[in-house]
Amino acid sequence: MKILILKRDKVGDLLLTTPMLAHLRRVLPYAEIHMLANDYNAWVIQDDPNIDKLWIYPRVKLGDEVRPLAVIKQLWQLLVLRAQRYDFAIAAGGVVSPRAIKRLVKLGAKRTVAFCEGLELCARLTDPLPFPKQVHEVDLNLRLLAPLGIAPPAQPELPVYRLPEQWQQSARNWLAREGLQPGGYIVLGLNARRAKRKPTEAQIFRWSAHFKQQWGLDTVFAWMPGPADSKLYPGDDELVQPMLAKKPDYMHPFSYSDSVMPLLGLVWNAKLSIFPDGGLAHLAAASPGGVLAFFADTTVSPHPSQWGPRGRNVAYLEAEKSVEELSDASVFEAVEKLIANSAISANKDKG
Image 1: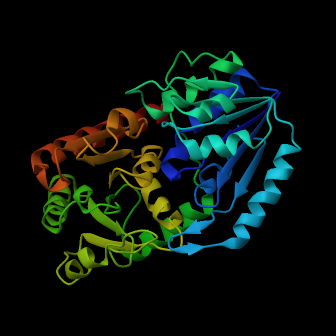
Image 2: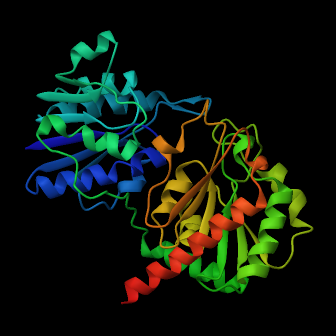
Image 3: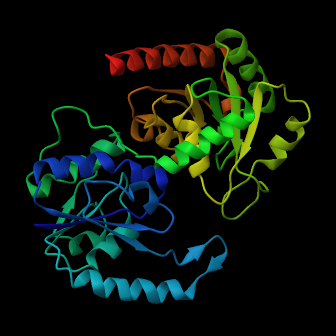
């Protein structure tokens, strides 16, 4: 059997397909499993042992830039993919996506599977599935395997990311220059497209001081450089630059732009990471230390019950309108529990 999984969204979304891939491989060990992702998110599963081939398509639009050559490459790739003659093609994801469905049906698979309701486009699928509400995206992806006769796993599946060793070493080199030890700090990330999802300067200073006083942990606060109105991804220079002149010695700034991999190296060596809702929160959930994630204004944004990070050591806090509303006490309580759980997990792993 030859199966193609399509995932056209962002980094966190693609990571949440890894439980689906693991379960599919376990149930159908001799199937040929391919993945189709874009040039923004494909690196997340580059080394996933549960896929036999990774196809990468270029995005046509990048910020305000339109790339005509990408259109030609996509058309050529479509012809190559149709020649693969897939038995199943599945559009993974936690939403009904007309764009994904349109791309899926062009692949010419014998059977096409996607969540689809109330659209004329649904008639073009051989297996349109009703979209269940208030179900986590990991579980939604697993339900997409039903047309193959595959039931969800009896035990929960967790997303997995395998950090290349070179970035582990890169992190250790940076830590040595900063006088830090693995496990001796918390990563506090500021990345979020909307300001309401980010902690404020005052919160960052208060929290960092508490981490040092209470647990002897330094803080690595990480941000995307650049202006807040960047078309590609909003930067945090306006928030961070005023902080640099008055930061204490136990706060270590770390900016990343060309690649997120150096930051992931630091996350993998941290006692714990704290991130706003987003792809980095999901990746940190797969790290040894785990993550505390912030959600805000979930009446208009995805709710953590559907989108929250999953991992061995994970928690989230939800603010009504903005992260600024979160009390210090709620943050410190969540961090304390996660640090305790991390220590328990480490002891179990050693045993």
